[in-house]
Length: 200
Ligand code: HEM
Image (tube, rainbow, N blue to C red; front, side, top):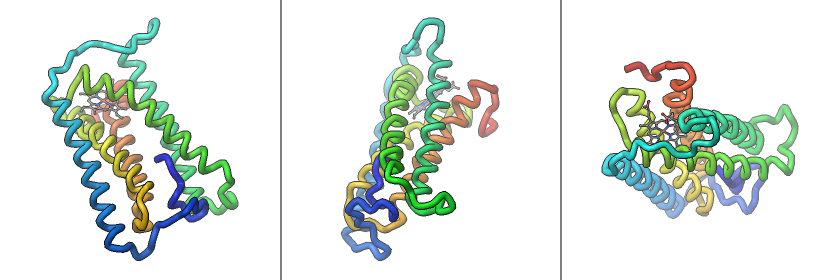
């Protein structure tokens, strides 16, 4: 989410390969395993820790849940920026011309801002609410919340590793975008509309 190293139009020392070496494949698998370990660790903590049920982040008249729902919605805007800038860097928006030089920094900074925005929200989720499974929506949300940080760890490792397959960064980025979309659909959308997604 935070680098352009493997983008074809912004090759900052690019070392992505169409034909990855065994070392690249081993690093890719190791990155995925680290991400899986992060996700599982968060889930285990969320389950083992007794939820405090307390509210944090109350600012003036805005309550915690409203603030979380709006922060999560802000995240979606940043993620859309991430997606658009990534498509442009990877030459998928060639109708707009070549990717400008500011697109890499925009991608990095919107990614960093998105990560920072997740922290207070996920902190409240994990600390106050914990890992819950009382409905399908809540279970899917808890799983996606844990998966998000695992996907982020994998993406950051993939970005910083040499000799990765060319598809590794886009796939890792797609994983992040997907988990965040699921998080929003199962939390903020429900908060604003009462819609249970998935039903159950
Ligand atoms: C990027 C990470 C996350 C974001 C943006 C996020 C966002 C939200 C939002 C906006 C809500 C609705 C407001 C509320 O009920 O407090 C919510 C609720 C909740 N979150 Fe998260 N969350 C994240 C991660 C997690 C994680 C890691 C867990 C647990 C492992 C989790 C568990 C829950 C639970 C149990 C609820 C209550 C659902 C309900 O009662 O309907 N969340 N989350």
